[in-house]
Image 1: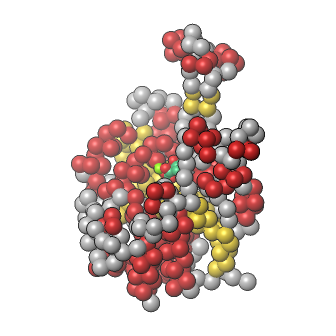
Image 2: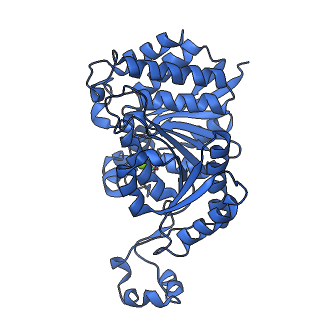
Image 3: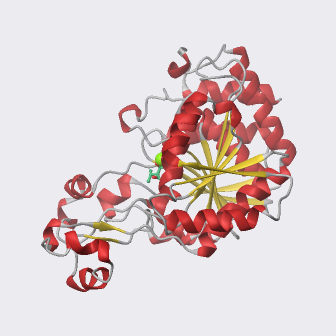
Length: 372
Ligand code: IPM
Ligand code: MG
């Protein structure tokens, strides 16, 4: 029996191509693993009314971790139009499978390293090395939303004096998305960030929130961060408001090391940080919980490039590196990162975003060659 059991979920769009590149590299490493393919994404929404079929959830439960390509996600109305005609009246609503998987498997840490590899022509600066810790299961993406607003929800909210201007709005004309933070949720993401900083010898953790305005949720995160920081006397806690952070990340990104934030702010800030190191073609994610983990590129499925093998697989390969770390294959992980850095530095084999003409698979093959 193979040492590692890995759920293999290419998804759709360019997800399939970048996963093929990952497989070329994993085969070159000779990882002792069984890769079990699973269905997820747009195709299954259109055909079955469910982008994350139950059989896929069951498959994940039988594996050690999951490697995930990309999935298309569209707003509610557009998704509805693309559903098979015979399913149109069944009451299905589209939801994002990746957000669902994060919540279902309680993958509360979303770790997104953004490191400038030397020689990458797309680097904003060559000295950026930031790791974003994004809370991954709650906050504004918890999915507790209402439209139209039920009367009982309006009644409950009316206990708050600031609701006054809204109480006369008709239910159809008001929508509500809840930003839910729990003490446990705040504590565990802040702890993940500090633990990582400690292990990797980093000197600061910056908590990125907005407690001057969003007093209760951002406030809870900051208060918990201050308590946890006391357990790590060698690591400084910096506090920055999210709007100012966006500015500082453009002005002085080299000053920042580990960032920790809530779900939506992390979504936004991690795209910004990705762009500092070459764009989403270089941004990888580890979604990690207590008992399971899923690894993916931060980018979406870019459906217009589907099947063209044009897009940069580096983000996917860096996600594969994060998976190897998680599986305890540290030498393989390190070797893969060195091979990736080599290919970037040489700049011979590169995709269109880097000014080259190589295909997704050619980049995978070149990284694989560097491994051997
Ligand atoms: C990400 C993506 C997802 C998110 C989308 C595809 C639902 O933007 O992983 O950052 O919002 O989390
Ligand atoms: Mg995002």
